[in-house]
Image 1 (cartoon, helix red, strand yellow):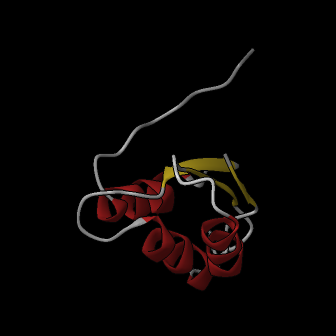
Image 2 (image 1 turned 90 degrees about the vertical axis):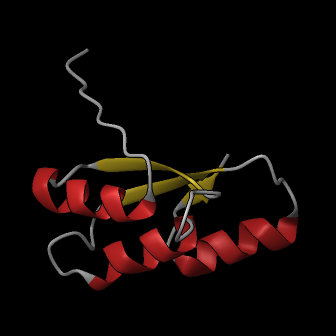
Length: 79
């Protein structure tokens, strides 16, 4: 299909890779070691070069409160 993926072990590493690779889409685990997915989303949205990246949060917490927080933080959706 032509897709490539890159994984990161932390939000900080994810932000660094995003800056290097300029992905079209990021699937982000909300519960990351260190800074969480919300921090990563806010950091990506604050960078003018990455602000257009589509971000989807991946979490086991299916509550509406968590979904709303993720959307408010900068994610497009969550699974």
